[in-house]
Amino acid sequence: MAFIAKIKLQNFKSHTFFQKKIPSNNVVIHGNNGIGKTNLLESLSFFSNSKGMRANKLENFLQKQNNIQSEFAQAECQLKQSNYSTNISYKIYKQDGQINKNFFIDSKKSSNLQIANLVNFIWLSPHMDKIMYEEGSIKKKFIDKIISNLNRDFSKYLSDFKKLSEERIALLINSHDTKWISIVENKMATLFYLILIERRKQIKDLNILAEEKLKLFSSFKINIFNELEKYLPDQKECIAEIEKIFFNNRSLDASIKRNTFSPNTDKVTFFNCTKNLNSELCSTGEQKSILLSIILAFGWMYKQRNIQFILLFDEISSHIDEKNMENFFIEVAKFETQAWYTGTKKNIFQVIDNKAFFIDLA
Image (cartoon, rainbow, N blue to C red):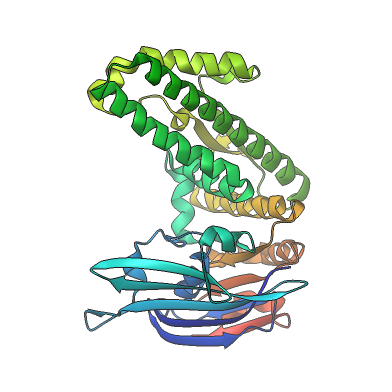
């Protein structure tokens, strides 16, 4: 079980100084809108994602008062698990006109990837609702971020493919070394195949877990499709087909200076099994409910793989109605890990009133 036992913030967004000891698995932060509830959760999310839960630029984490920006922002947490305790922290600071960040484990310079080996943060916020109703790549990016936490090799596949793509374009524009271009395209095709396979493997596992574990919540299925689908069962054949497409696209890609064929051609949809509709066609309430179910299903994937995680639910009442709140808290308790919640009204958390630590920011 992962557990934040103490948190200390300095100059982090709206918080000049904030410090609390946390004695509970359930942490409820309540108060009026605009008082800094979400900022507390965001300070934790930054340990897992260097843009935070709202994808902010680094300079936006530095506190501003009277149009004067602070020189640094800092977060420190005491992380407890079943057999040890450690301190994780980060500092965002100005230096030579640049905004920099450093992560630390027990005061030793580290990285957020190394921190992620200790604990991950899974979050749900109203900001994420656009995942459900917007089309295009946003769903795929959301899935890829989660998969990258489940499989560290996957994020390397993505970054290596991007680097090779840039190299290929440079070669197509500036070189006529077709042999070297073919070598680069073969490496890209192999990574392309591995990315497609890993996405499908993780999505399949997620769909199975959701059906098994979340019987009281919105029934959903994540679907994924690519024009290469029929080639996927045979790795050699699939890689050869990808190389063929790269070859045929060389002139086009050189002229527009970008790769027109990549793993981004995957189409990801979220399907409401009850309504038999894709999420884009569902009501706002149904979309929010499905997104909550997806986050809970990812929690089960982490738990089954013994990956330590902490849950962050920003304005949870916007994703689940009051009559289902008790089932939600029962489900979260099954993860046996810490969960942080925000809300404007304390009474929506009455189900866990005697099990939670309340922080009043009013």
